[in-house]
Image (cartoon, rainbow, N blue to C red):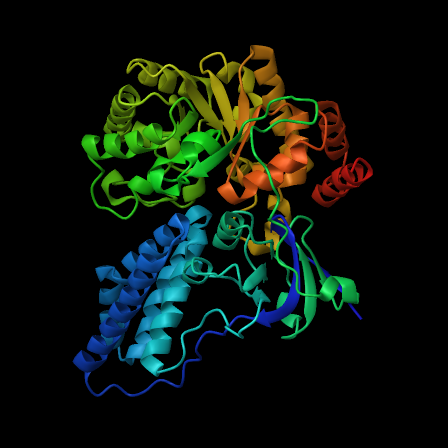
Length: 548
């Protein structure tokens, strides 16, 4: 009898408790004959309105900024006139309201999935909205998270934003899904909530409801029917005590910074208890709108962040959007492979004024606050691109200019790029995708997207060596930084700072303080020598256990 399942750990920590599977989507009945198209069209539109209104209400009640942003985006999608028109067309073609909604959403989701990349990851969002609208039309319960009245481990094929955004950590002990990857909604929000999570576990739905299981979100292991001492209900091991700053056992400083989307993501005590921001995702200000935010609107948003962190580092990433994260005002044409197209810094090739306005706003915000502002460009591929960006930023008085390393070509030429910029920040999510030629949306390839892949670690080490040679900092702002064991490996490779979700800082900080810089270097050597991701993780974990 199988007593252990293996997936991909995407949010560190352990938890144990009874497993419960997610409520299933509604099953469509046989199609009905349509006697009145206007009646069916009105019903379909009413279903979309109901779902949009419900999600907007849940967004208003959400206390977590990341959850609120996701729910608001979902509500906007449900209210998209193009979807309503697609439903009208499906009814006009002879479908009843429920089948018309199902058809319209499925066609849109299939199109996104075929596009791959960021768009492919959003297909599950549309499918969740579809299932909610169809359930309302059929008078069935909304699909979603069970509420048994006691803590449990949630098992699902995949989790939609509307589900993950409203998880109650007091009830949901850990997450296990069949699909998903390191950058899925499940992974991102699990880390934000401090919940252990395992994705890409193909046999997860075979776990029967009520089975006592133990989930290890670091190793990706799910233990079934374990011994009595491990099957008692235990909450995630997130309650570790840590006060900064980040450092190793022998005092080597490693700033532990936050990944945020706006000032709302910062805690109230940010000025005293946050070392800084390693990634300010400015694209959240641009999403869901038909016109670019004005200079004043951007200046105000950036100033709020900078004023909240006087004297602290704030690394601002310029607009990271494009064909894979479409924005109407960019007027980009459809591309056969958006992940390899006009995105990140490349959007300035066709719309240079968008970047110019953003840099103007950043410069004005810097003058209005005394934070230590660093600005960097995403999706840099060549030294010349880095040089051009640095020239544009410095012309506005921005003195600390950097480049994100997300493309293998940039990693291989990190030394040359550092001749033009002041720092590098490695985005391990995209760098892993491009290094392994594995679409982040493809759950079957989740093992290739594991940040422990030795080839990815090789590129990170190459960048770190280039930084050391140039005397310039090289940080990691990808989700790899949130893994406590991998964080030690990254420091051993020569990474100078780590940026992650707020919930991950304590666990990473405690782990780093248990080991010296030399020992972290030995962990890095062991991981680099491994033949694959699983062996790299195992080698480092074994050494850590010996040194505990």
